[in-house]
Image (cartoon, rainbow, N blue to C red; front, side):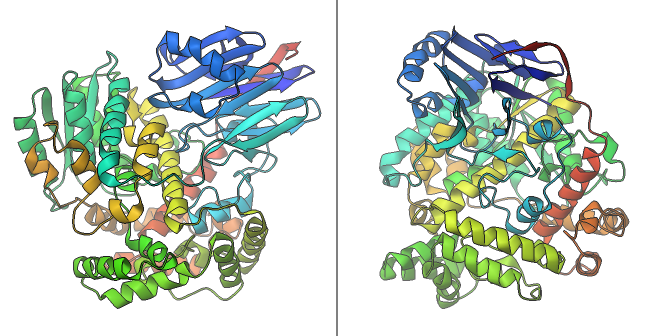
Length: 608
């Protein structure tokens, strides 16, 4: 696992990160398992700066970044292309800045001697064996939005930095400071298109640094990345193809590879093992991730793709279109914002168009949106708390429930009354502290990205451990996020065009073939999800049954989970997302019991 850590204190520290390499100029900061080319620094002593990860700044720009550190212009340090961690020291102040999507999360813990910070929450918990916080894990399972409980992490005694904030440590202690606006100044889609194009091109370019490049070649998002990379050199393009999917990803991939120079296309064929939940009977074969990770559910499918990529270029970088949906489009939940702002005519027009696509009525969509339009984030959390204190709801698909700022997932209904009550109390406290944007979509967009970013970080760990290949998700880069989310959700999600922002950005360039820009279909994995639920039901019943760690903590109860698995076995609609979350959390809890040691005794106690 790749991680970074550091110490700030006036007295010595008694631990060192196992295998840690000191960061140049920052004598009490270390990186673990990061290649030297991805750790760069300038300055030393009272003025120092380091970046860890895929940072597009050259050495001169990093040196000039010391002026930004001196001016405490923290946000400017996050505006280089790529995705990376920033560590900056100015006098007695130390700023640790993650990215906007949580691929470089920052957490910390403080005692009387000083403060440890890290990009790994589990590593900081391991300093003294701090246990998992069941209320925080309940929030992870029931709410699916990483920032709801603010600074609460999944472990007791360890705090986390919410997205859009940085960690600032001074002799007075550690605190979080917001560096990113709660909402962006809106930019018209057409005006934003050149900025989106430039940001995405630079994001891909940062990864094309001489390493062999491979890429998913499937939907519109991954195809865009593959074509951008092909402008810079050869790309091994991989399409997962399984007859059970019945989509047209392979058809478009073959046609794209025949049209775009430098794309060498290969197929990763499906098999009886490439289904959801395969391989979970032996979780010791899965790398330990820092948090519950959704990709353990689809590990066999991802392995098939990476096996194909590595077979043609080992030790390279693999581009994925993860988060493309989150930044390039928007769900119809934005209707709530239109209603809130009294844009009734526009809301009605959009509702009619969405209704035609979903074979429902415009009134149905507007009725679903109206409750969220009549409250704010704090009010929504109080409503969720009240619902948690009532008996669990009968299950209906999430798409049929009212739009909500923070939807309660089916997993909330599987928890014991005591856990539901504790989570409700935590939500009420969070509501008192909430500082939220005026628009629902400004909140939910950021939370979607944070969730995808955390999962992608786990996938990166899995890919490095199993294939020695780095996974890169350019749509999660800071500047790509900023450029895309500045476009209002009702323009990104307008029902008349499929991902109009991407089309507007690349239509005049020739980077993408015209038949790709006019594509309106999208592949899905439902068939493989249901196949996995049926074929691996015994394993899932064992994972979430009487011996379940989640069950021991009251985070799931046996009867509703068994009923949901029975629904899946008979092919009925199922709370797939909730099951994925529960299985990933159960696997993670079991892995923590055998996680490798991350610290060693410091035989030479040092001072900061």
